[in-house]
Length: 186
Image (cartoon, one colour):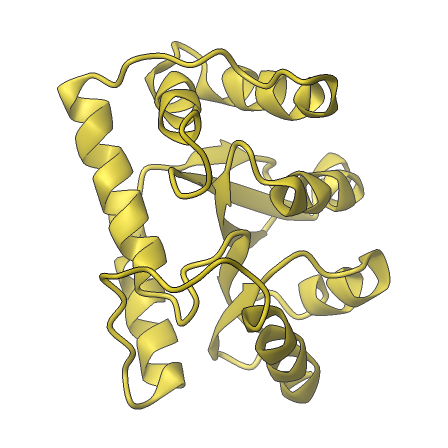
């Protein structure tokens, strides 16, 4: 399993637009991932599902790969096998911050998240909003946590594997590989 995850992660980290200027790469990626998993409680997330297996997902409202990951996790969430904690970030486009602010600032963040995902392919998503000071602080924390990943790319899934290791998967895996990865979430 570790070989599958590491090989997939390395392959995906070669795709993207560039590294975050604030990226600090630790000498030991496993220690870096462990520290990130320990600090993810500082993030503002949108909880989806009530399953016993928890995965944190850094995403951008405008990211097609994040949307694909959303679609590929529907069965597990609906079956009560998985809880996803979606962490909005603001890295891809000029509308990312406003959309993330709209989701985190909504009366019902999960409803706003679903609005974004369910209208994603129709040129929509959630309508942008201005961030309050509180939401702005949350978005900064989320972006800073994402910058601590080796690539700074979304989607990035962070979880504790069934072998006890902190695990970071960057990118959207094909359904068959995603299922194998999610089978090992503690």
